[in-house]
Amino acid sequence: MDLFFIEYRDPLFSIIIFFLIIFVITFFSYWWGRYRRKEDSRHLDRFLRQFRSLPSKEELKVLISSGELSEKSWLLLANSYYKNGDYEKSIEIYNELLKVSSKTNTKETMFLLGKTYFKAGFLERSKHIFLEILKNSPRTPQALHYLLLVYEYMRDYKSAIDVLEPLDELGGDIELDRTYLELLLVMNDVKLNEDEKQEKLLKIYKEKHKLVYPIFEYLFRVNPELAWKHFDSSKSEDLTELLWHLEVKNLNLDIISQNAYLRELYSARGDVTLAQNSSIFELDVLIKLQGKANATLSFEYICQSCKGTYPFVFTRCSSCHAIDTAKVEWSLSRDYRGDFSEENNSFQ
Image 1 (cartoon, rainbow, N blue to C red):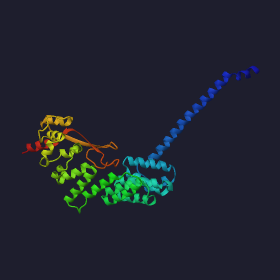
Image 2 (tube, rainbow, N blue to C red):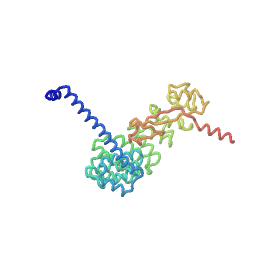
Image 3 (cartoon, helix red, strand yellow):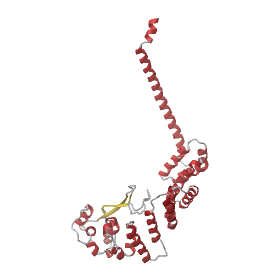
Image 4 (cartoon, rainbow, N blue to C red):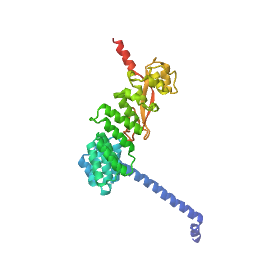
């Protein structure tokens, strides 16, 4: 009998028992974890099933007040709706959260609600939300920034300029915003005649050397002669689309002949024959074609701040709201205007 108990005191037996216990614990922990994940998944599926169609306001109020999900979870759900463009669902969740949320999270929820109103195009509601935030927390740069955007989209440029003062006090870089808003104010001021607008725009350009495209787009549209007079050849590539679409009657051949890039550009378009080739592939191809194919340039713009791509020129990026960050890219494309003209001729 003593011999039997001595065997249990054997170190090798103790090691076996130790690893056996570890195996049992690991085995049950693994399956218990799988069971819990499965139950959590079922619970989440049951919850999300409620949102395949938007609950009514009363149902949403009950769901939020019941505390089945934390406030942070509701904010994540509302944000997912926001990112998917379901602004109505996002707005209703934020509104209900404001009725039950703690005071510590009220400011954050109100900001998200105002941001969603802005994205959805409800500018007046968005403005009231941000003004309410600033009434209680004046030193909130994010709310000031969005309030500026709201005023800008509402074409209330004077109010937008007023917002720059508190932003400046909070240490924000407002110089470019101020220049841009002053530019919009001049362009949309009905009290100014065309000559006064042109003078003010040229003054802005000479002082800041920013916002080249909107300034010269306006000048080439209303007074091409003045635009060419103050044209900066170093900005030619930035204005490629604008120059490409200029009417022949508005071209200044003296300036074009003195600038290598302009010679290549308008030789590619077929207006002049001042260049035989170009270091830019697209222009070189068009010069070599000499109008033998219906080809032209197409343009797109990349925001150098957020890398968003747009098929049209912009001054303020609609995604990240950066100003004067558009970089032009061009490519060869078919000129459908030539097709239309051939079709029209065939019916004559």
